[in-house]
Length: 356
Image (cartoon, rainbow, N blue to C red; front, side, top):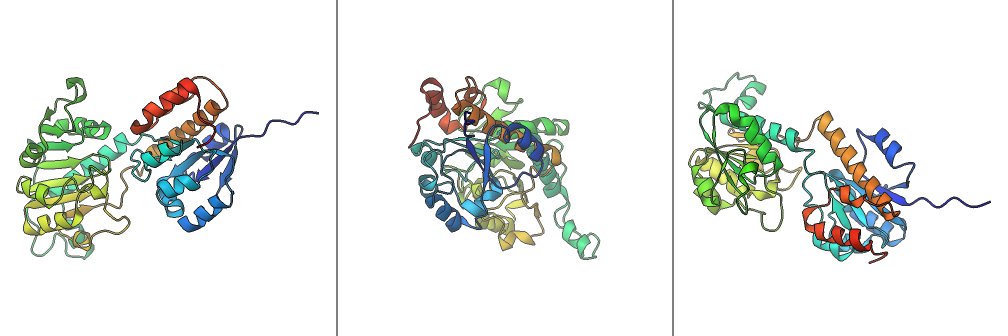
């Protein structure tokens, strides 16, 4: 009697809220699921050093699992089992993962880059309209003061305004399409101009021109060492007076203290924010500001989007495991993060290394 081959191990970090059946259908027959009850990073690192995750080849992680593991930096990557080759991140932005540390430890990361586009662009549009029109009324009505006493300043219509897109990726393009009925002039700034077919009719300008000419500035850049505080006090001072700023990207792209100052001075008229520098903490100068329209990081908080994100992430895990088992064509279908495209290409040609 021959023994059946041992299943590979997959580490599940965080919870599956919408696609547990999808996991059972796609991962359970293929791999053994390992979980953690670690309450914090120190406990998780202790489990790693004790060999609790030995043999794990792929991991699925949620944004919220950072409360258990902390960021995926050099210390964490070095503590993880040497068998780990892939981490599937359930999110578009992956600033919690150090791609340098991952690459140094022969770990490839995937994300779900376009699954969030519609929901996040919808949120940006909602925040734009809210910040243009209805800032302080949310507080007055909750306090039983109707519109407020005195009433709030008049808002602004979006029609005919200039919309500035800082970061014309999938979400930025999606927002431009949603704003077309308003007849807005659209400008954008990226590290370099895009092909005309990818701009939705928007005009490329320098960052300074974008800040100076936009009536509404919508932020859609990823957070990294180059974009942290991309909009600081100096940049906010260059913004068109009376500008409305919307941020659905990452909070630390904007210097929150500088934004509060600009709002207090009246140079920035209003802000619509879904993300913050030190979530879940929000700068006290924003929380009750009459011209700040705020959400608690809910840009992708829809059933359809959350389900699509989880399923895509699970598919990345499945492809990772199947590829490690020798099935051809699996890794080519994974949504590997940009910084590691070259590395996965090498693995496709030569095979993944067995250790660090």
